[in-house]
Length: 565
Ligand SMILES: Cc1cc2nc3c(=O)[nH]c(=O)nc-3n(C[C@H](O)[C@H](O)[C@H](O)COP(=O)(O)OP(=O)(O)OC[C@H]3O[C@@H](n4cnc5c(N)ncnc54)[C@H](O)[C@@H]3O)c2cc1C
Image 1 (cartoon, helix red, strand yellow):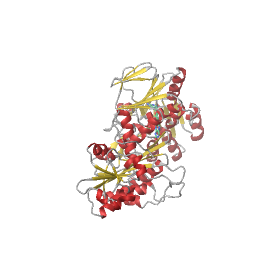
Image 2 (cartoon, rainbow, N blue to C red; image 1 turned 120 degrees about the vertical axis):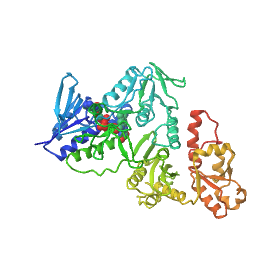
Image 3 (cartoon, rainbow, N blue to C red; image 1 turned 90 degrees about the vertical axis):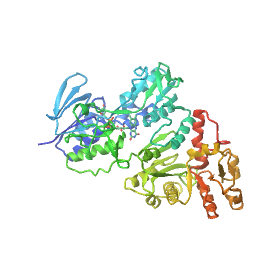
Image 4 (cartoon, protein in one colour; image 1 turned 45 degrees about the vertical axis):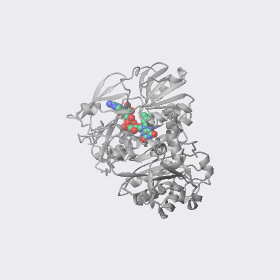
């Protein structure tokens, strides 16, 4: 007898699971239930309709039920909500939303991919106003777009600085609106550490966005919102992007186990606590292979990967479940920002001993007109050198650098592996020693105690405590902007001026990007100095780190002038 496979949710995970099941079994009866009006749409491209990068909201829908039937012989029932799972009889109860009729369907295997719903915090006064939007599907983005056009909105507030909030905010800026991005935490984009997030903050400020951090929304009115600090922000429309809540009601009511992170608990084959029911996508929790703890990973690629694995398992194909590390990328105006694995914060929270390497090489040979700095922060375990995570930000291919590191992390790679990684090179594409090779070399130096470093997050304190800071850039660079109390001993004069460097107290060296200061430290150490620290990231990273905080928190500068080149 042919199998009957029912799928709840017809987008990233659901549509993928159904299509995979069909490829494995031509005779199965496969039915997909979708509460909304569309299936198989590109959630990830939704923000790009606001800027008309995607010209028509209809273009966001990739396949309709008729095409599913024709191409895959899969029955798709839109506007049909599964309202109960009856595990004893292996049926689901479905509500046909247009006419309200309820009916039952039997299953041999059930795949849940219900996703997550945008959180609209009830404590915010006015959260249910007509001018407040959560974005999840094509109807939501079309509704927001129509509202801001019909109401001739000028000022729009986006609440939440995660992926969705940042992408919506950027597209609204491109569409010509005055955008305020409000984030309750001290930074946007939590896959990045606080220091790396400042580069993104600067980009947002540079591109004319108003950025507010460390402040929450208290009250939403028709044209203004009030923040917890009392600050008032003009906003004709408000997009809430403070996170999603996994849709677990159906699973909970059916008595399926829910994990400690609030997602549906699944095993290595994506089976729930009931072996004939699978769950995938934003609604589940997955196993983090680095922390060995459960985590939620609400992204499109895991949903599709899990969906395939679930369908495979129904047909006896085993999936080697190695756990997830969480790789992601976002474009914020001219920058690509990518990350994988654990950042510094996460490694600390997981209690893993670690060190970081921070390099800012050129992404291409610097003679090339489109060469730009690329910031790479690598997190590795000590003393093993096992790679734990990385973040890269730049105008060039940050994603490619992170993909390489992600591949190594998923194979338990170390700094040595990354150092020896053979990567493609041509001057218009990269550098002979790629940014990720360089990050590994710095990491190995630190691991082997070749020199010591201090993080750029310590620099303000060093300046304020009048520590001995030596700037080894050339005089022209120093004069264009330097740390308030830094003395200038250029690398080119170092060997003649060593006696100016004290031996009786710690000395902190920097240049533009820590490479020349590394050379200076090596020369000095060979001459008996043992009190030296390289400032990770150096002047470029210090300026990028300090500037947004100085602007946002109205702080005193610790530099004579910023220099972002
Ligand atoms: C604006 C936006 C931008 C994004 N950008 C990116 C990106 O750039 N990169 C990335 O990796 N990820 C991105 N994501 C996240 C990605 O889209 C999700 O992780 C992915 O879609 C999750 O797939 P899913 O199948 O779990 O849920 P979804 O794709 O959300 O599908 C779940 C579907 O199930 C339906 N449903 C729920 N309950 C029922 C029920 N009881 N009966 C019937 N139907 C039901 C819902 O209506 C929904 O349509 C973005 C998401 C959004 C909203």
